[in-house]
Length: 237
Image (cartoon, rainbow, N blue to C red; front, side):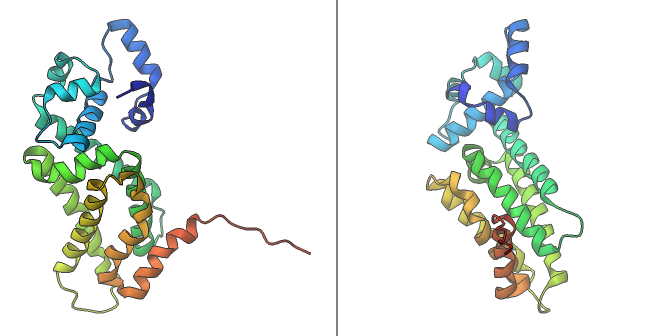
């Protein structure tokens, strides 16, 4: 991993190159070791899988000494949990930023889905660690993933207030969310993480259709394209 190419990822964790250079010159230790390690873990997971990844390999990928890892994390399980937590926190932040007061449930769903997918596409290795590895790793990483999933499901259930018909089964939201998870994991396993942003229409439709029906769900999915399409000025004679 070339650190010179990773400062975009480091800004994801809320740091910058100036901080890195200043503290390194003063102490000989980088305050960004934790971030490099999280990136190293994610890259290893995407390349060989979490179970097959050792702490030594994480440190080698991150370009840090094992001593740095052991100062920050008890083991690789704790490291995976920290990586998942960082992605989930950033996803929440982007959803909040994308949301506007007065948005309909469908519009909020579309903008939120687009914001999260854009984040995952920017950092496909971290997306892989969070969506593929964390759910089956056990421990705190699995708990974090389960809590985030429950949060997403609770929001989806708000669609019942806008449902086109009564009597939607309780399993509808679970099924919709499971379908989206399967789609995203399939893309990540196939090495197409950087293309996740292109799945916004499909994800919106899958999440909305149990509540809004096919026509309104399709309109909700397409609304994102209309909102982001370049505006053309009509010539005035």
